[in-house]
Image (cartoon, rainbow, N blue to C red; front, top):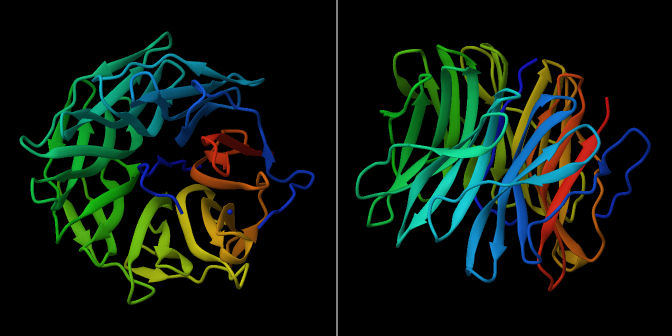
Length: 374
């Protein structure tokens, strides 16, 4: 079973009221840090009773966003203290697991007017910041992380120059240090997701060019290269998540602006578009943010959409690939609220977890965690 973990930064704010039915998605109570806005961006599972979620919370006293980490012990979610690299804004965007005492989280921390990469490590007792490199003179952001083994881990994101041009950024952990690995850039590129199938088979996805065309990069064990990928509209096309079952069975998801979700499949030779369901004719801003692959006929994605006729409210969105088609799967939403999903994972036992944020209109948003039992 291949499980990937990735996330997207806070600027993604893109849910019809569906009630959860038996054996379907259900809301699980989750804590918040303080009374201001909280959001969870990514989730990863070591075991059925050992799951981590990361994100951020606004601290009104400091007037800054601070890191948030939460842990599931099989019974409940609880806040776990996590450090911040600076006194400014600190975000955690992605989390990946090796073992119960070896968990990694990535993001960025504000350094004056620029951001620097931030990487944290859980050693079984506490979270600690681990030194990570940056492109000198640029803002640097890490969006996602994927684990091959304890000494083979990838993190991806982007760097940005003073003219606001973006460039792909890929970092690698060799068991001792993080280092920048050269990666190709086409034109104003951002990487949002990464999944490592093997040491010589890693995919990173995102968008290229200001008009946003899909971008897929592949690592063959020696170098990153751009692999041509399709687009589903003449408008913006962006890939946010990627998950592989095998070297010839990889999925990437995102949005084809601004009316429909986007899914593409790699068969070992090329990427191709795969239709996703039209679940609500009134839905707009449909986007799939994250994806997890349990098997070739059991893939799950999570994201959100808007229904303008319902006050432009945002609703959670989950879809499942059954080996033949993508299918819309109802997921719960708080009424009179915006509801978004940013991350999804599966435990070794097959339990699905999805995380994000929910907020009653005009009030601070709060953490949102959904669970679907096998």
